[in-house]
Image (cartoon, rainbow, N blue to C red; front, side, top):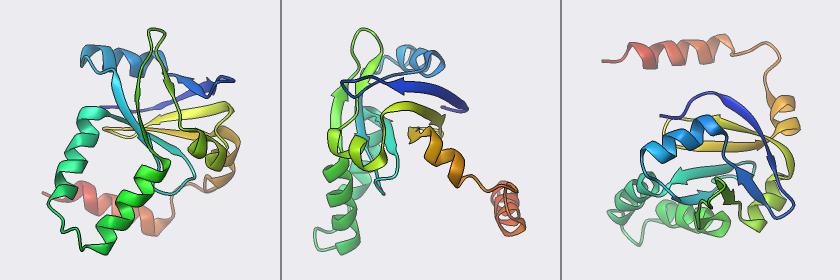
Length: 148
């Protein structure tokens, strides 16, 4: 389970060094393969390959005539690549995604449960709501947390 925010840097070759807290979880699970993608081009999603394969299995049940599933496949495969973590704990981010999401230099790596989200630090901070969560969003979250 990934949680928290860890600042990081993308090197000149487009590699992200996984923050040590997240790398330790990968090592404990013996995960070295990832699927790096995006569903919007604004940030990268770094999925441990076993977690991504669960999504693919669910998608495989959708009809090939399902336009929404097909659009999702097109998007994640356009931005995506399967990558292997190197011996120094780095993963290569796809060039198309790096350019679109401006993933160079200072980034933040946020744990989102079963995946890591990699954001351009400056863009992420600008997009944060200055007043935190709205009342409407707080109610929705409270409702989710109160579900049985």
